[in-house]
Image (cartoon, chains in turn green, blue):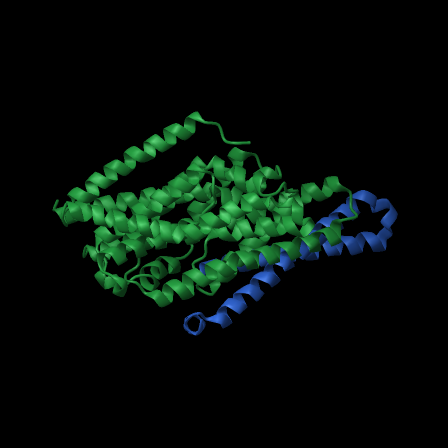
Length: 363
Length: 80
């Protein structure tokens, strides 16, 4: 096995680790509203989400191609650039998880790859039209749309069932949440697992192991699906807490409206080719469902912290990606830099998990 | 600003927003009607009479079918 193959193995392993943190980090997007309204028990909700995330990864391969095509110039990308970008994304995902903040794994991945490509090649490596037109502007608009849709949806729900007995209405909306939460999980699996597939495909192409333009091999698809499902099953309970109870206290109708609006925005965006952040969308929908009932019901301080994390995601992941690439180059173009950084990353992640395991999830 | 205006496909973004609005509010409307119909049927089926029972039963089934159709459409969109 040559040094190029060693780097490729490290990149694939790192990409699957990112996929795991993606599932782990984004579990909250799908299950928090169902758990907080008691539509499902926590363990059943994460198991259900994990299964549908796994299934969702097999539905389509369009997003996998988009990640490799519209963000950076594929011809100048090397496996080490992809590796550095992934480290940027994982580091930001773990940092925001540590503090219980829902931020976008998708934007962390894109930011990390853009940052490392900028450091390695310069501005000519980045497709700025794609980054602005397909990532940044939709990232700003999508949560606002989700906020408005969820707000109108909950008003419609209350108008129709407002005079009915609360017991059957709550039971009905809880049942509806099983379906709306399932749609969210499926949408998340098909979007986010494919981003990892796209990154692994990019590394395989850069290594000459896959023809440019070819679909990811089946082993890439099934390993990405498995990693995101395992991450989802592991569950990021801190973020579930933030999403489920710390933004607003939801009733079942609000949970259903938020999940329905979130699913609608993600599916509509997928249809029109926008790689969206499920985190941004469902967070906007949760705030919309809360604000439509009573503006003061939303804890705007928590919402403000989340918005700051959103705004910081792209630049911070890019900065970490660029820094990581710089550090790998201290050791030359070989496998030594990626091996040392991967080892350091595993050690730091273990420390972070150990510290968090000792402290309870905040109430 | 004009550079951003040229890069971004505003038409597609507007279509996305409108499609999301129609789907998100539509599914909330349809599922609320399912709950309304089922709730009225279970609460007062004796008081409704034949006309009311058939009416609310039809409302419940039709709304439920609309919800199922929306879900199937959503999966088809994802697969496409």
